[in-house]
Length: 430
Image (cartoon, rainbow, N blue to C red; front, top):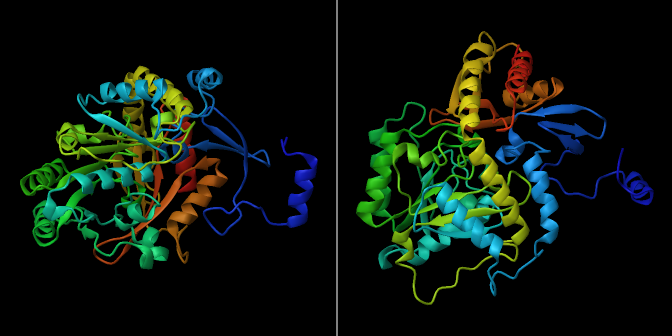
């Protein structure tokens, strides 16, 4: 049942088109309610959310701990002007994050979204760069995606995301090849070193496990270690974009830990409040803190370090910690299901780690023949099976287009729900 007032519903019917300007030109289905891992639209259709609300709703949609935290927010100061005051909830969450990620002596800067947190990391890197590198020039990887702000897009290598905004993007950003599609680690590291020597780069941005834009590709440990060594040797900052991979999505609390990395700044978001509030965080290392000028103002947003968001973040991080053993079990179960449950279909390869995987699609498979976008077709078929996934595509270095579907189940899924998710996915790809 809709909660809109009758007068409002009448106005919408008269208008014929929704007042909301969405992310795509098409009129999108409208979600009316949600419970557990299910979304329910205004027609009563139920969908398993197989992508955790774009990696954010890691505890589903009616988790007891989060509902209790929401109720508790009534006793929280609703707003504090963060340029004039701190607040006890943000202070406590900052301490919690340094403990959760085992990053002693780091400081935490809160922002509103992952893209804003990434931009904060870029601004800090610029301020703290050596004089010859204080240029605002950044290096990142092809196929990367760092958010919808102009700075984040300028540092993104995902061509489809950039295409409508090319004229507005920074032209001095440097994109180097990623060690994917058979590109050797040695050649890719040589490209990084060449860029650092030829351009006044102040920081390099990497996703230790790349997101949907790159088909959930984990970067090789040897490559990540080589990047850190080059950055250290040349006085270039290293920013780890863990907005998607953080909080156990790809194994450990931070994917950087798998390679033994020590980034100058690590950016997290998405799962930080389990999707209940928009908040992100940049964790700034002591090596950067000691180079911050005495007179330094880090510009921010009115809703940065928002006390209600911080209260919800505390609840989410505590619950993620409690679920840590279960997350590992769920990841192992998902890996086994993907290996056994998607054979003999339209699948070319399955790539990912932990609870983040992309299924590469065969464009010559019969259900895709003659269609413009196999990933869109697969997404729509999955939706008809009652499963929400994320379609993706990228132009490879060889000039071909790779199409894939990405899944990222919630940490709160049961074994039965996970098995049903893969069953529906297999039916969609039959």
